[in-house]
Length: 145
Image (cartoon, helix red, strand yellow):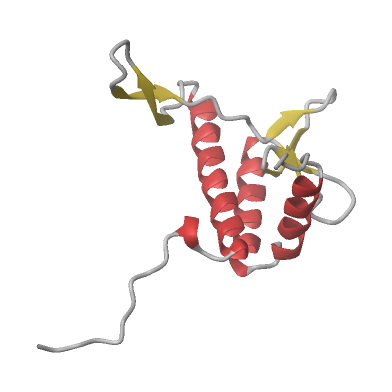
């Protein structure tokens, strides 16, 4: 037998909080790109999720249903596309002040998503994501014991 010092890779949901936040934002960016492509082509997106429900006998039934993700981009009254990065359902202030980034058009939205994905992958937004997470946790009521 030949032994190895290699270890099994840690899945994202068990990673440290920084890696977990990065993977969550990168996964959300992938969803936004899918929504963007469906918006460009004029077709419905094909993003699904698996849910489990109970039937009358108490058996667990697994179903696949359409997801309804929220778009990160919107247009202002002048018709300019703006994008807000959402983390935990809340917009994050990447520069510390404003949450909206001007993209111009749908191609600009794609460019902004690429820039944000690069920054998240490089760890440039770790502090912003940690701040957003701490604000989110601070706003929650404490559990009664």
